[in-house]
Length: 207
Image 1 (cartoon, rainbow, N blue to C red):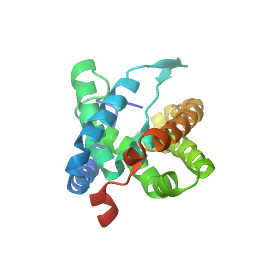
Image 2 (cartoon, rainbow, N blue to C red):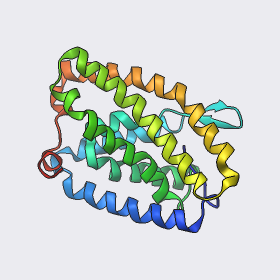
Image 3 (cartoon, rainbow, N blue to C red):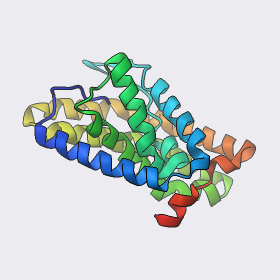
Image 4 (cartoon, rainbow, N blue to C red):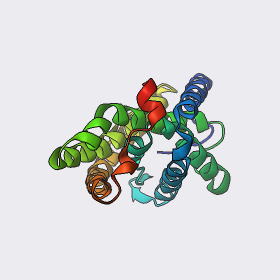
């Protein structure tokens, strides 16, 4: 779901950059410094997963781990994804620097939404509820990210409507796969390292 340079309108680019800057500032402010290693780990996981592309018609899809990142990082998903997307753009020309704000926004907003909606169930619910919330987080994160990417294209011009629809449709199977992965990861972490799923103190105090 990387949008390339030269595709989006100036208005969308400006709005995306401003919103991503604001979200990153909030994420840094709310980030517990003890959790910096966790942020780095999830940024690296996001970086690697996004590099493995599977062809889907004229485009391609890849795992994004938006839901899992949101559950583990909350608002810190903004700086984590910003760094990963910046390095992907710089090293592999995935996305671009001018569209970095929009790409960050399209991934980080769904992550924060999942954190706010389902994070509490993942941490405090029973095992079945946590598994269901983990699956919902994984699937919902992908769907929201695809919808936001599609909206970014449509807001830049009606000529991108077909591509926007393709992006959403192509990521429905990815949502199902990520739902399963996220459910298993949540259950594993709850059993072997439950503190990893704890809400960041700064975030839980200020959200």
